[in-house]
Length: 474
Image 1 (cartoon, one colour):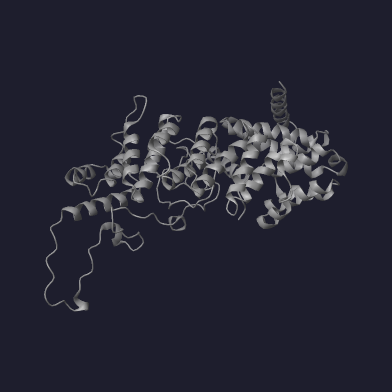
Image 2 (tube, rainbow, N blue to C red):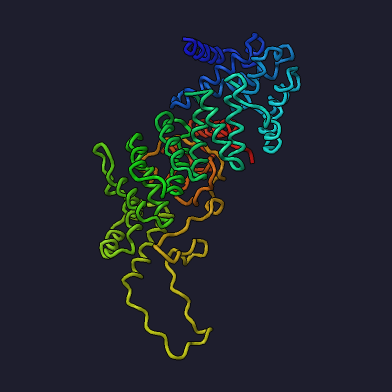
């Protein structure tokens, strides 16, 4: 009942904001903790998949920022308002606002130490943030602040102290179940567990995430971490367990996940995993079959390109519709065809008794994929081409980049798939078929349509919010 009342209050505030400016709310005496609590509840709805709440979040952030900029020492004498300031900072708020408001506050030494650590964190000083927050136990704080602090500390320690980081992320989930904090903590746990080689923890966190947060706007980052984790832990995660996790997804998401696993496995030479994932992608579910998907045909062929059924593989490769593949997958197809041709090529003649002079030696034959010096060279085995680095591909850096969690099959086919294997971190960029809406503009392009511009602004704001929610600053 109380939760519904606060959500109703948030909606009422937004309706009134259409008439009154955010500055008017600051003058009307609304307390910072009331605005921040409303903001949190809206963000929790977004984490659960209510994307219609995104405009509410943007407006509440604006209103809260205005209110905190006008807050004085008397406002912050109420501990709830000072905690609200800190929570606001870790919920995507303006770090300048946090620092200015903190300078006006008079509070206890521990609260000031937390504030200093959060300001350091927001301003990209992780070492100073860790030092300031080290002695503070999130479990000894009020739950609303402790959950966020556990998430921040867990994110900061993910690389240097992964075991401690996982324990802190568990604390965050315990203090704030069913919220955006738990969503972020679970998503980061997936990546850390994979980097640690902990298959059981990886499977558990993945299962919990799919059960509760599959429709979060950050779910594409989970997909990135999940695909990389399956590749990293292919010896520790059984195919049955993988099938159990993906069975909780809708058919389209399941298909995209299997296509991405098949591609990465084929490139990494994991023939069994690639064959399994390709078969599951082709098999589909609920009466939806994908046998004609050119990506599934390509990836399944890559896993058997040097097998005894080479004639069948060559015939299958020749039938693939190249126009339905991205450029990087066309390169993979060229590589597979070249390797298949080498398998059935007649043996080279024996070398002459007298070797030819070095200057007269012929250069090795090169395929279409290697003729262009800008393209990566063919590797010596399996016809699998290493993916170029993200920088070379023009992709985004490997930071938390929230993307909408839905992708159509047509979009997945047309999206370039040139990312390299992900670093063992929680936040990674998509490597194959990014889970983005079909209407999303290309990366780096400025949308001309006002609706597309609004969507781009929303994605940038989600990016900032997720960074504040625990992505360790660079």
